[in-house]
Length: 366
Image 1 (tube, one colour):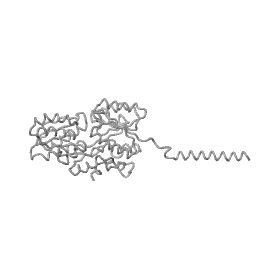
Image 2 (image 1 turned 90 degrees about the vertical axis):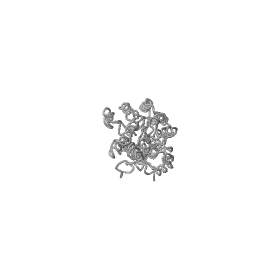
Image 3 (image 1 turned 90 degrees about the horizontal axis):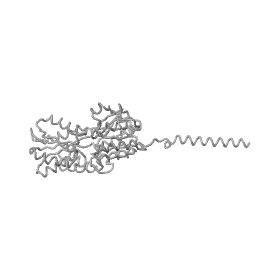
Image 4 (image 1 turned 180 degrees about the vertical axis):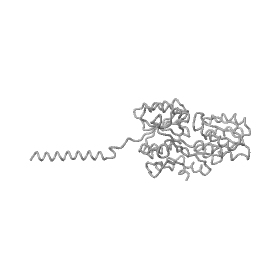
């Protein structure tokens, strides 16, 4: 009798242990995967207006999607960018994804460093050039952990700015000077290509000179002091970003010149300049590109490969001309946290009816 009672108790105890083990195995928290983590190597300065705004939207998207995002600032120093890459590679806790920019054409070296790593690589804003890919291969080729890229339509941006400026020139004539960014940067090269496409359509516009202002207000100012004095009939200034446009504007004002300017960015300063018409042609929209990349990586980690929804290497057609009303609306929203964009709505993993990615700033302009 005693043994019978003991046996029943033992059976009940074992049954209870089995139930607890089964419950634990069914508990979603017990088998939840580690959070998706991303390191972004910012090629610019920590306080550079362009990258500050860009990264703000990356953080907003990461918050929306539950991604852990860490940003390392390269301070416009290629050696520092590469050292950041080595530090990530050697760190005890490694991210799921490393996001890099092919600034100064550093992409192939980053790929080489991570060739044997489990970290997945993603090129953002500018990817390897065709010449570089002829040697290093494209994404998911020689370097299988390089899973893809997302770039803006930079060539279109250069074209749109040039076309808008040319429309302001006197009929049948006009002289222009141009200020591009850093020469070893795909974004600068593509925007220049857009400029030259527009000029080819309007051969009566004479491009007197193109200089590399290196995205810098001060550098463009110093160049413009000499350049504008050299070309007294220039009336149009094509600038590949807002900082260079403001540098040229400062030099022109000192010389008593009244010129028409293009610019590209979304800083409060340039939006105000568009509103008061000191800038005649403003292109923007690219500042949410990093947020769009967070969406694609979120989906990839969830098992929904962006390669099946638009390709492994995608171009986001984000750039658009901003009129005065657009600039006014954007100015009211741009400095607000999570300014009207829920990046979850762009996810194909969270919205299976979506067949691709169509991130845009339309929601900010309503």
